[in-house]
Structures are given as structure tokens and as C-alpha cells.
Image 1 (cartoon, one colour):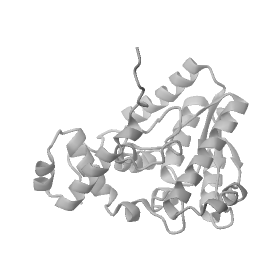
Image 2 (cartoon, helix red, strand yellow):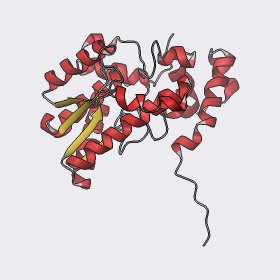
Image 3 (tube, helix red, strand yellow):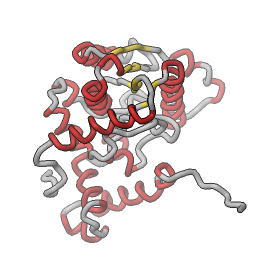
Length: 260
């Protein structure tokens, strides 16, 4: 579908430079030795890794591959390994199979199991960050953040979000500008939380539609009715707005009972 004017940047040099400087300045201000991020072989983490290496130098960037089952996730591991090698960044892998297996007695359903996996990954990032005096880089984009399409205290548990103001379409565009391998750019987006899971399949709306609805709502200030008139199916507009509203707690500071 045709995206609304303004959603895409005419020139991606400015957002690239702003994100690189953001990472560089924040790391310098916090006075840590570098950064760690989950490197999944997907486009978001590949883009963040590339920008972090430019900002800090590859020797200061550690990528963690955290598959539940390394054999089943071999293609993504291969893509992540090749990207890390091309960037000359540090890379480690830790398989979560045994950690996840320890939770079998809880008999978790698919969604709960997926959230558990995301939280085990977060715990691993911070274990390495604590050990090596690193900052945890998040890989969430604006589309995911505004929809609440992330696990609270899982992939949402990070120190900073370098691409948190880029819609998914912007992520694809900037990845192409930075010449991230085409096989990664063209890969179907997935959090990899269970077999066959894809972002668009789980949400039921394409990223082009999601970005359009969010952009018209957030940047243009359009009402639900106006977005529908713009040309988006009513049920999809309502679903996105409902997701935004119901996930507000994920983006807000923790509620505190005021006693003084």
C-alpha cells in the first residue's frame, strides 16, 4: 500500500547521524565500557548493532545470541554470526534450552512461555552488562513500542532504545541505506518466541498498515474516523488504537502510591 507523505525520510543521513551520536553521547555520559544487545539475526537488532559499531567502535559492542534451541534456530544464528563478523564486533551465544526446561512444571501456555523466554533473554543481557560494565541496548522500534508489542521486563527491559523513534518502514529503509545484507532485510519479522510465530501473523495487520495508522494518529493527530476515511479498514484502525490504549502501562513510569 502507499504510505502517507512524511512517514519516510527523504534523506536517512540525518536520522543515522542522530542515532549514532545518541549512542555515543549516552555511553560517554554513563561512563560504561561499551554496550551489549541481543543479536537475533533479524533486521532490528542488525540495524542497532551496525549503528552501535559506528558510534563506539566494534570492540565496544557485544552481541548475544540467545536461542532456545540452537539447532532449530540455525539459520538466524548463521545470519547473526555473519553480520557480527562483517562488523568485527564481539559475539557470544548462550542456549536457553536448559533454563526454559526448568519451568516445565508450571505448564505455561504459548503466550506465557514466549514472555518467559523474552525475560530470560533480558536477564542474560543484564548479567553480562553487570559483569563487564556495559549498557544494554534495546532493539525495539516505534511501531512495536506504540502497540505494546513487546514483553514488559523482557525485550522491553533495556537501558536505551536507539531506534525507538523509527517506524518499521524506516527501519527497513535505513537498513538498506547502511547495506545490511538483503537476506536480513527481506526476512519475515518474528520475535522467535515459538515455532512459526511472525509479527504480522500474530497481530493480523501488515506493517505498512500499522505504520500508516500510527503515523496518522501520532504525527498528524488524525481521529479514528479520519484515518478510516483516509483508506484503512475500520476494524484494523480500531484494533491498533485499542492496542495502543491497553499497552499504555508498558510505556509509563511505574505507578507509586503517594504518601507525602
